[in-house]
Image (tube, rainbow, N blue to C red; front, top):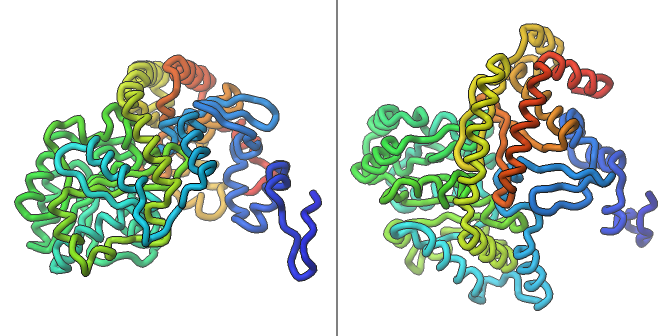
Length: 478
């Protein structure tokens, strides 16, 4: 493709029109040259890595060849509202049409003010004070930073769960359970066993009067497990007794995904000191997150003239105008259209359907687990012949103890996509389940179609699925 002519001292650059007309091979080449060539090798293992999406609406993707794909990934938590929700698009178009101001730190923002109010209204208790950075990882780091400041730096230990996933920045990466590289991180991190109150108590006792925060996902979306009510209430009591700031991370599960507006809200009277949210908070269009703190915790940490601006995790784009306007509309849609009820309706189809599949295919499915519109199918490691495949895999893959399970799960995902036009994914954390986590605009009939398609795929047997997947991969790099 010919690129736009540029002044002689500059290299030619693509226009927007030219970018939108790139062919898939050209995109792959540009990724290899300017992004990451290994990413191309990894993603082209699947049918969806060899095609481009021309448009998306609701629960469906339309490919460049006109094929429609049912997206059951829910954008990995980002798309509770589905693709290009009309009210979200209208809010953003209105903002642009009226030339609203994006960001300026010496003017107050009506969007930020209204969004803070709305968060306080929909959350329980005195979770009323908000800060609005860009990403979930920033929200987590901001919450931990707030807890440290609350204790005036006199405590030095933060506790997180062994299976935690809180982000990949240096700080949030250290707070994440599965370490993939030894990056430096914040000091004083210790670990407890997820859902084990005794383990938490032992960790607290090991650091007497020194724990400033405990960070927990009430529902671990990356491993598809959740804390019991007994554990969470016990954690709340422990934190009250020891004056520890309790942080609930609901970046993935917020805004209705598991059947309540936030997962912890199914337990009346249970309130964390800080809540983090992101992903669907932005309506699938806005890069925005929030940490919402109890009033007393926040005011003690930051509400004075000397520290009023110290809370920022990233000052330039905090409270970006169009992002806040989009989140305002996203929250209103989730509340008005009762997204928790929509999640429960999807769960009423997925739970019995997936449990039936597990019973019909015990050789392929170890178990299923989930809640609302977020379910994991734990595919069995497969036949022993796959051990040989693991030995043949190059580089780090051969050393990955989970490689066999990942390979089989990928083969199932690939068949769902190629043969049934259904897009699923698997997690890189925990036991790597296949995830069915549809947007909350998805019709329950589409969830039923997904269950039926998964059953048809598994009827073929794992060995043929894996053989086909490997055959398609031959000729390209692992």
